[in-house]
Length: 176
Image 1: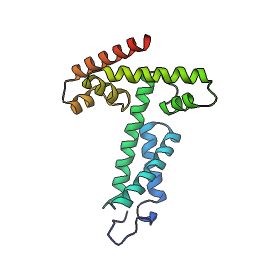
Image 2 (image 1 turned 90 degrees about the vertical axis):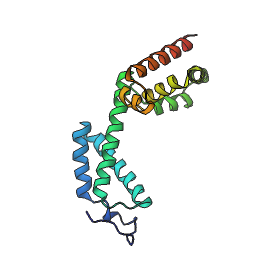
Image 3 (image 1 turned 60 degrees about the horizontal axis):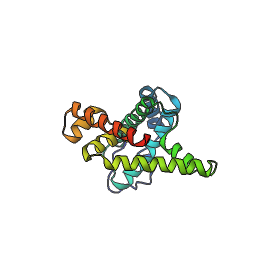
Image 4 (image 1 turned 135 degrees about the vertical axis):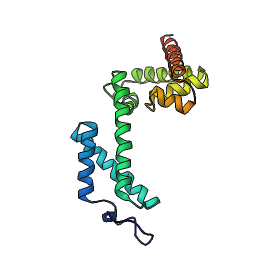
């Protein structure tokens, strides 16, 4: 892969992307995520992010940057998969939001869903900052207990306590 210099236009895709790189990334990602279709999607997302990065700041080694982006995308994919499996979710959050605001849902269903979402937001707002932060880092960002502990500068057991308190509080508030 050719190194960049300041006289290269980032719009010249051949300088940072080619079929060989795409195939190498697809094979690499297939090994990581164990699904050829997902690997193809992640390869495409890698291209898009690499293209954006090259426009902003051309790297010295575009191939290394492409693999770095691919690894980060695979990690994100695995985190989301773990969260979905942990909560037995068959659909992602975006689908739920679309369903809530969908015209196919009746007005009563839409209203109930919005009220429940509002009640959850109120319950989260009632939590101490540390509990709420741990809950969001785990549930939304998909971080592990260890990653949350490092980010919040607390112990893993404290992360567990914060999460237990947040989940208990939210469950009680949503039952009312």
